[in-house]
Image (cartoon, rainbow, N blue to C red; front, side, top):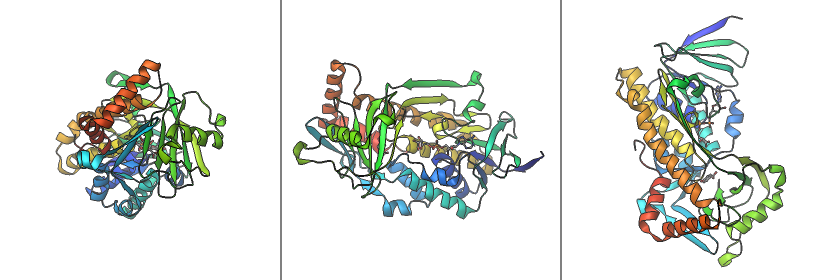
Length: 396
Ligand code: APR
Ligand code: PHB
């Protein structure tokens, strides 16, 4: 079988939030790209993932002209509720650090970005297979793949952006001798449900409970998203809808101070593993990693999508200055600059996770409660949480 060859300044592997947003930001900078994705566009669009956007992500989407629907249909939240048995405290991020967050599902961000890509009229290939990276240490790296019609293709580029998530081929294309992996596991998972019922709360509730952590989130004023801490090896088959709602009611404090959790039809449910993972450096030769391809955080604190957005904000500028204007400073600094924020968010999600999940013995539980009371009562501690949650500036 012969191979069809082509060339373009940037090949982007992966059409998750990192790849789609990078493609759009590069287009705004006048840099052409080809986007490759193993899944179908419908699959990528339907994938239920994160839902909280930091203020810097919202500003980035606004600035890139893809924030209109988010501003119209998203929900602005001033802060979150922190809870433990018999107590619920509101942290007002706007009062504490002058920034809010927005509730807008990743499915919606994905739709907006796919539309922008289509409007830009640039090349995207969905349902590709056998993606492989070549010549990353040369001036002309290339990516080979088989397109959805079964045609073998090779695209020669000046740079390759590995935005293909935790399981994609980009990170493994970096030789072991130059790559370092930093990893931390957690002995529990999250069971998440999407429910066709109005949220029982105005803003998100993060709840510590002796039975385990629970989170009440939402996607709109008619759809709720809720999570429960479960054992790492638990099976979704063990959790009937009734059992899930009963556990949520207990952990979220149904009946306390007149508050009630309203259950509803479960539209989707699944168990999500928790890990912290960082691969360094984020660049090797002409390959630049962004998003989950380079780092994974546990979902507590909702940093995954925001971190991916911050990476590609830096990367799009770096690639544009280099490929369009011939200046390499930002591209050379990309890995170090991105990793500063990556480690900050890795620490924040680890800290939130450890503070809120039941683990260890009763002594550990008392330390967690002491920490929660401090965050709720001290403006300095609350501001530290708020600054990290609502988001540090992109170039932090
Ligand atoms: N070729 C092309 N695409 C691939 C390949 C491959 N061989 N392997 C994986 N992909 C695609 C996946 O199908 C997926 O659509 O790469 C994409 C990676 O997307 P995500 O996993 O969503 O990663 P990223 O874009 O970095 O998003 C970061 O968003 O949903 C949040 O919490 C999530 O932290 C994550 C964040
Ligand atoms: C979500 O709505 O999916 C969500 C919200 C907050 C988190 C994690 C996930 O910390």
